[in-house]
Length: 111
Image 1 (cartoon, one colour):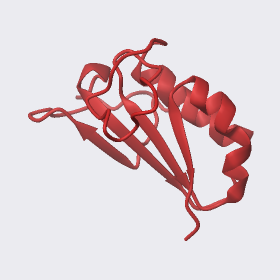
Image 2: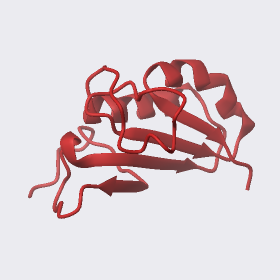
Image 3: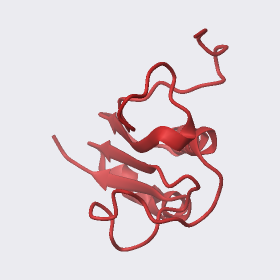
Image 4: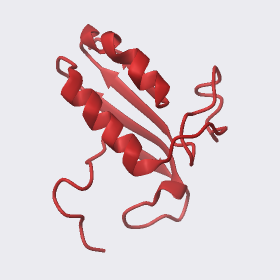
């Protein structure tokens, strides 16, 4: 499979997909995406995460196969792929409201 044109896809840190998946996964086989940032979080990084959400799902509210991980609400995506960011900067907490709307968990995790 050919790599997508530069700027049309995102590099992801950790992706959990349905067993047997090979090549570039489609949204239907994604279970959870984890991003890690060891820097000050800013609006540009939020836009990057929103781009990942755009690539992986439509807006919707579905139960996730990982409901045990985030039981307080359905994931705002269809298909319901979890998207989690761990960031070492407390500045990430300023962006939790817009991220939450799109089903993105923003976790401050000081190293």
